[in-house]
Length: 423
Image 1 (cartoon, one colour):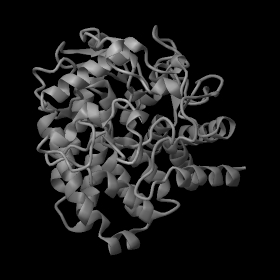
Image 2 (cartoon, helix red, strand yellow):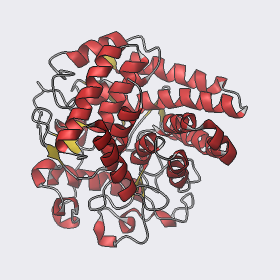
Image 3 (tube, rainbow, N blue to C red):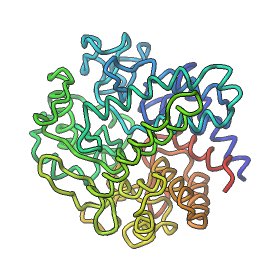
Image 4 (cartoon, rainbow, N blue to C red):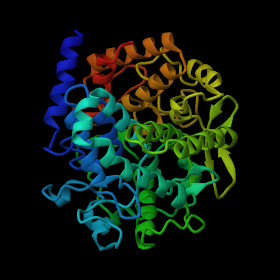
């Protein structure tokens, strides 16, 4: 059975490969997405380490001169009407810091250095022959400098749009989004609803707020003036991945003969700040910078700091994962939002369904902290969910029924990693 699932996962990744990178889904997401490519590389390394390296190299080939890694790199051969907001909305090619290829101006969670290090470890000899890490390291370091300098808030990094969290319509953003006047629905045309049922996607009101925030950020010249931005939050998953990837950057630096100490120091400061600022009541929460308060909603992002090594609050997070809010091991996948929360919706995008990439982060974190029994049970449940639902974008957390896009790349990638990585 596992052989069949393994082959099916490989087939999805091969089918979605463009020759330089992997699209998340041929129909709904026909371009390259930033954190998708990082997760894809984590799975692809088991099939072709060289292709996994190419996945990351392709993404960083679209890095801006200021160091940002855009959350979308547009395929010029794709139909312009195939995705909204497309290149005409972002108008990135007119910005002095942008690359020649059209991109968005937002970013996504910085999982890339972790993915690069895991990719290197899959075939160190081949990676050394290609000079993979020496070429990618300066770009990864520039990416993290961008986050620290342009988005830095007391040793953590801020997001200026819900899309930058990767968890687009999480209930953790509801209060902050209420301050944003939505763009009227006649001002944009959604393309996602041509492929997925409306009940599984963000509402028109939420989408109107996303468009307003993105348009304002674009019109500012992507200036990162946090004091002027309407939406400035510290997300636990973004910052957990920032800390974990700084640790990975330290390993990369040591491998290529650079000084790892600055990266280790940044990782330690970020980890300490994450606990000091975002941890409360046995959980990690989002923090509204303008309001100077935690948002007490519980989302799966609050469990992902487990990916940070030596995290002092890891036992509390494991306890929260096993409790009634997430019921780890008792659902098809860990839900994206608190099962007991007032905004829980098992079908709508990041407001309840389980996702394979966040599940992988929780699994990886459990292994990091020696919770091997819980990690093994989560791995088995995830593989069972994939066998039953296929490689769907997300799942109903109780029934395991598939939702969103089909033949989804990061689903196939993390399933492949779970299959090929020894429990």
